[in-house]
Amino acid sequence: MNSSQTFKNPIVEQRADPWVYKHTDGYYYFTASVPTYDRLEIRRSTTIQGLGDAEAVTVWRKHDHGPMSQLIWAPEIHYIHGKWYIYFAAADVDHPVNDTFNHRMYVIETDAINPLEGEWVEKGQVITEWESFALDATTFQHNDKLYYVWAQRDYDIPGNSNLYLSEMENPWTLKGPQIMLTKPELEWEVIGFLVNEGPAVLKKNGKIFITYSASATDINYCMGLLSADENSDLLDINSWHKADQPVFRSAPENGQYGPGHNSFTRSEDDQHDVLIYHARNYTEIVGDPLHDPNRHTRAQLIEWNEDGTPNFGKPVPDEGFVHS
Ligand code: AHR
Image 1: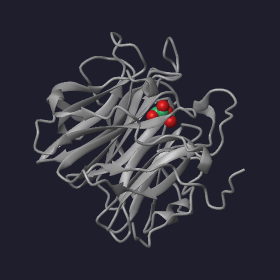
Image 2: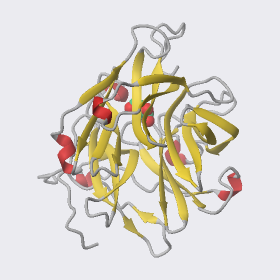
Image 3: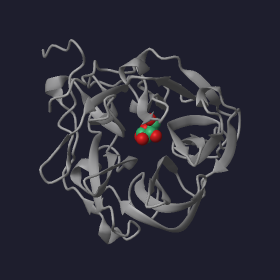
Image 4: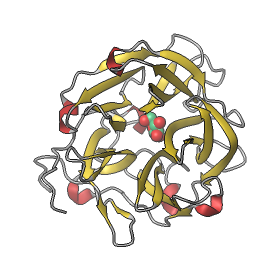
């Protein structure tokens, strides 16, 4: 790949589940989980590299009590039908069980031209067919339809979460069937926790690709890949193929561990697809990995295989990394 686009990683320190959206105004809009999981912040920059030093503006804070009062996770900012939306998951500090995993999914909206200056309105919970731990939503538009992909627990399936797909009536309401795209079942999906989460969508070469993350959020965290023909019935599970091996995983030789919860954007010259993801640069995590703040936002160019599938390679080293 001959591109002038190179990145000094990490791009943004201590920002997990990174989401980058390149808007028509020439800005990259960035949001991510913050270590305190207590707010939604946005940054913008005309370059991906510039996001690291860009001002972070808080546009929403967790409630003191109730269903949006703790563990604010994995926000994404989308521009849909002329308005901005932030999708995120939140838990309830007053929940009778108050376990870590009582999240539901929510949306806020602004019609401001610059979302960093907007008045944001809470649009409520995104209701799914059943009530259970739900998180990591993303949306995409295809053939004039709006779709929603998310992770949710099914109490009849072992594990924390599976991935689901539904069409949307509007940017905060689902409609029609909700199909399960994948559940944690392969050996690399069930290490530590049985997890399929963090979906991200990339359309290319006549295909729709959905990457997702699997296993516990430690060094075993890695990415899987689903694919479907862009003209297939996306709500027919038989349209989807699941790769049997992870497509992106820890690279000790580059000092990068637990890469995942990715998003996609385009390079500044609009010539390349860019993989945005988080990873840690050490293996020894003290305590709960969810409360280790050092999942840093990273970026690298995506190559493409002859068969039209993405080649994510492996996590590149940090700037100045020297292999011990
Ligand atoms: O970073 C918080 C949560 O950790 C994210 O929502 C999920 O993808 C990961 O397990």
